[in-house]
Amino acid sequence: MIAAFVGVVAAGHLPIISLIVISQTLTFKEIIALTSEPARDKSLPYNKSLNWYFLIATVYYLDGESFFSFFKEFIFSNKILTILAINHKFISYSLYVAGFIFFVWTLQKGYYKFQFAQLCITHTTLLLVVFQSHLIIDNLLNGMIWFLLPSSLVVVNDVFAYICGITFGRTQLIAISPKKTVEGFIGAWICTSVAAILFSFILSKSNYLICPADSLTNNLFEHPNCEPNPVFIPQIFQLPSNIAEFLNIDIITFKPIYIHAAFIATFASLIAPFGGFFASGLKRAFGIKDFGTTIPGHGGVTDRFDCQFLMGSFSYLYYQSFITSHNVNVGTILQMAIINLSADQLLTLVRSLLKYLNTSSVIDDTKFEKIISLLT
Image (cartoon, rainbow, N blue to C red; front, side, top):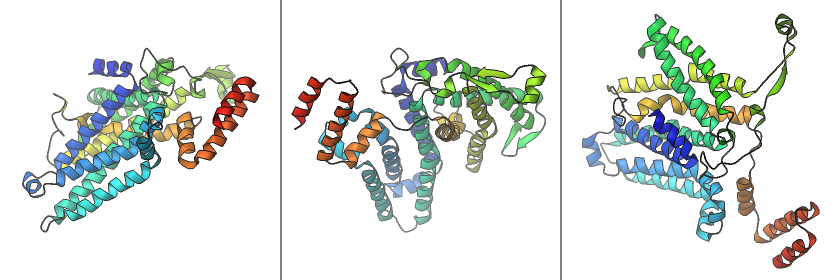
């Protein structure tokens, strides 16, 4: 499984996004299947179809804008696709309302409680799984390291929680998972923090891993070079006077990513495991051992990714709050211009940009006059 995952990472952003979408779909399927009742489902033929309809509508709303931004040249050269892009949010809302109306229309006497319970479970799963999967994809597009580092730390924490638990474990941590111990929990935190520093040191050396995606076709052998985010550049830090006196060192130099990695490791160790505890409680509530048999010997997809969804949403918020240096790119500016400006205003904008490039000596006077003449 590890070798296969490394192969997917090397293949680029699109294969990883496909893997995330497949994983979220299988997780959605496994959780929805917990509450299915064949006898009732036969009497409610549209029940399962509605679940999948809401999934498709949600994915379209959440990931549609990212899709539009990466294929903007193709989309905005087609009138129909341009209309879809410009009215994306309204179309998404219309799709949801259509599903809501159809749900009400399919309500049948004697099944009200079951149908409303299904609707609530579907929406809860969309929030906990699909929405957080969307944030994981955003992490990936911001730079592969923001996908690899958090997800790998969850795996490391799970492994060392087991190792430290069977080696030192004496005190039960939580009743819902009797085998989890306080000693394993704390030991895994320490080991994961060390691993975070090591992983960030290795991963931050590759432009392929730290540069934001400029195309979904990026891969290990063809990827952009970028101006590194300041967190990946060694910086000088002044030590507090008492520590400096003790160590006889006034300043130290290191990459800020190490500090950020330590905070991410802390969440992966102390908070993300509660996603697993939540999944354990859900399985006990329905009296099952595993969510499915999708992965031979490992249960269902949900059994393996229960902590990753929570980790993904935290990583996204952490990146947006403390790491990102800008949120503007060519794609977002192009979309804003097309959506908010008329044809005449767009021409004025183009002329202004050309004038700026001319005065900056990027375009000479002859080319500038020829282009302007074509626009008039």
